[in-house]
Image (tube, each protein chain N blue to C red):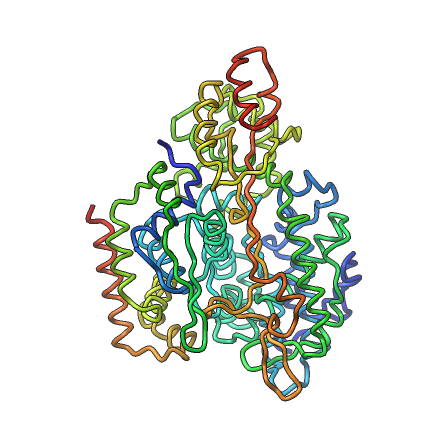
Length: 432
Length: 172
């Protein structure tokens, strides 16, 4: 039997708290899960610093990737199979792309990408195309197969229907992470009737559409998404932790550029700092490595990096205030000056964090062909954009709700053993 | 003075030196192209159905509109709405207090603003695939952008345009 069609003698199942079971019958999928690049995802948390706010949020990219695979498998095998618009020969391509879609995520990837200006999507491509175990498994299917999988994940594949299953405004990726993140954070939002949505999904030319009769289930999904953004993903405490994490990385880079002598040299960062990062170097990075450095850098002579690392490791986070940039930017400039006078570098200790700094997106109806909206399939075969039919979705989609926070170390400002008057001025401005 | 809200200030500066930008798609493509020819915009782009797109940029512009620094005017144009962007007086005041150092951006953006969104979509797609040989890029454009019906001559023009822009970006 050819490798692409090979089935395991017995189906393997993973117990999963969200989907109950994840079913694997295809040899290719089983082999991909066993590669070291996929196993690395066990050591990358799905929600980065959110575990410092919601202590249950320790789940990994590994859990999520299996979940996305399982959702796609159900759609294909239980809903699409046999429909004329669906080509069953795309099954393996779709399953592999679903499983591997987050393969390039690095440790605390959002902060890393911001500070060092690289993107996990590029690394996903590099792992799939490069000299890796994942590539060798995929190439056994067909020498061109790794490239096809990489193109689906990059959304540059000509097969847009397959792309939209994994990446669109109602895709397997979002359906898994909303439910999984809700489960592990313990919040009551994020739940919706996925089984119903799967049953009303239909392949239609180059996209997945939803039968009109399933509109209310989709409304529930959009509402869940909206609530999860504001209650979990935009949570100010998690953002505060990410602010510190980002500043540690900035400081480490700055110190390296200044030829500071680290007591614990950042060996794993050298190629990043020198802009010579190779794929093999990247694959050695995971969150256990990064947290090791943070642990050790608490003892550094540099007061900024040691303080920031202590704050992160011991969860002594910055406090925050609501901030209106339009009305308060002059106040921010004043605070900057006072922080310098108080002996605190505002670059590290006075930070504005905006909703646009966060890696999540709201549902948006089609606007000048920016992104494909969710389309409802009407009884007469016509397609209609969701927010034109649903008042609930119309009420929350495309509405501007933005948010800015100002982060600062309250404990330092309350310590009056030095620079008392300046700190009082700062506290007055911050209304502490 | 060191620039506050640096990422926001860069986007405001782009709108200011462009004068007025007609269309969300055009704004997205202009910033993407500027970023690809080495201007330090921080917004991350991904390939979507219609080419490179940044959700971060969309949200950043929404924030700037909410702050009153950028004005968004919605105009009905044919069968759809188009949005025009320009800097407000308070946006200008903010920028006057927060300098943005991108000296040759104006030349590049003014040049881009003189082209239509369709051409900029082609240019941004070529740039997105710039690591590939030209014949593969052409294949990608014919496959992924079939509805736009770009010609070989237009693709050649896009390549030449990118070279010209890169020269402009390094003139200063």
